Amino acid sequence: MNPRLTPRRITVVVTPTPGLDAAASRAAVLGAATRVCGMAPGSLRLGHDEAGRPLLSGLGDGLWVSLSHGRGLAALALSDVGPVGVDVEVPRRVAAEQLAHRWFGPAEAAWVSARPGAERDLAFFWLWTHKEAMGKAYGTGLDTGGLERPGPLPRHWPPVPGRRLHPLPGPESAPGPAHSVAAPLAGPRAVLAVAALGPRAPGTPVELRLCPAPPLRAGHLTSRREATP
Image (tube, rainbow, N blue to C red; front, side):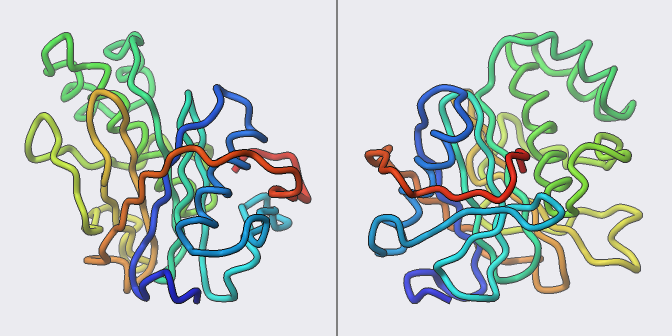
C-alpha cells in the first residue's frame, strides 16, 4: 500500500468535474488522487475487471476501489479493509416524495414524506447515495433488489457527517459479510456515502480529501471497458 495512505482507513478523494462527461470526470478524480498520494502525474491507471468493476493500478496490491461521478463532482474511494462502494450526488429539485414511494420501502418512503417540503430532496438523495454505495460494494449496483436493501435513516436531521463506518443491520449482514456505511459529506450542496464489506469494516475511519480540479492530461485514464461502475 502507498505510504501516503494510512492502513485500515478508507480514503475518499472528491474533486469538481466538468459537467456530466464520464471520461473527463474519471480523469479529473484520478488526477486528484495522484496528488493526494504524492505520485507523479499519470502513475495511476484506472481500468475495469471482467465483471465491470473499477480496477486501479499503480498503488500496489490489496486495495479495493470504487468510483462515482455526477453533476459536477466525482469521488474515488480506496479501501484496504474490504470491497468498497461510493456514490456522490448534488441534491437538486426532484419529485422526491413520488420517487421515494416508487423506489424505496414503506418506512423509508414515509420518512422522506415526513421531512419538511424544502428538505425532501436532500432526504431522497441521502437514501439514494447509501443504496448506490452498498450496491457498488456488493458488485450488484441497484439491480437485483438493490433499491430494496435497507438504507440508514440518520439519527439527527439535518444529517451529521460520519467519519467512521458503522454497521448497517439487515438480512445480508448475517451469516454473510457485514456491510458498513458512512456519509462523510452530507448537506444541501453535496451528499456522499461510502460502504464497505467484511468483518474489518465496522469502525474504520473515513478520510475525506476535497481537492481542486487538477489540469487534465492525456494518458491519465485507461479502460478495458466502457461500462460505468
